[in-house]
Amino acid sequence: MSDVQQVFDNMQTRLDDNPDSVAGMNCVYQFNVTGDEAGEWHADLTGEKAEIKQGPHASPNCTITVKGEDFVNIANGKLSGQMAFMTGKLKIAGDMGLAMKLQKLLG
Image (cartoon, rainbow, N blue to C red; front, side, top):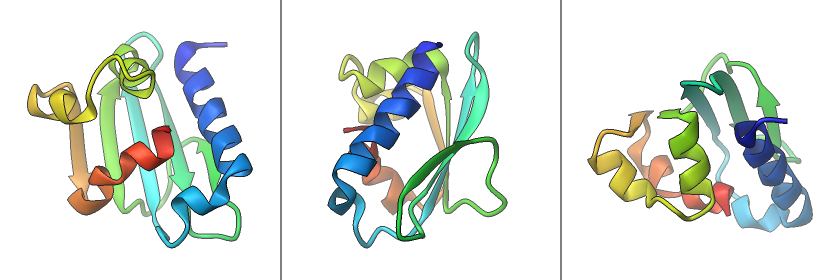
């Protein structure tokens, strides 16, 4: 299993274990991962149960584009999401307010 897939699996486990961590967010994040572990995933926080799924979502509120290696480093706390954004390693489209809440998902 790839490191990127592991991050998304861990994210789903945390959401299953602690659904209150994203209570009231009512949004969809789209993750476009580039590089060696390229792929698309989305986090749907609009239903009763938060779900992480592979593939694009039809209407995300916030889209994150990042290289796989940088995404894993952000999730593991080795790279600040804010620093990644400021240095162009992480690109955000859509609701910037939701981007600021992204750390709730990554744990």
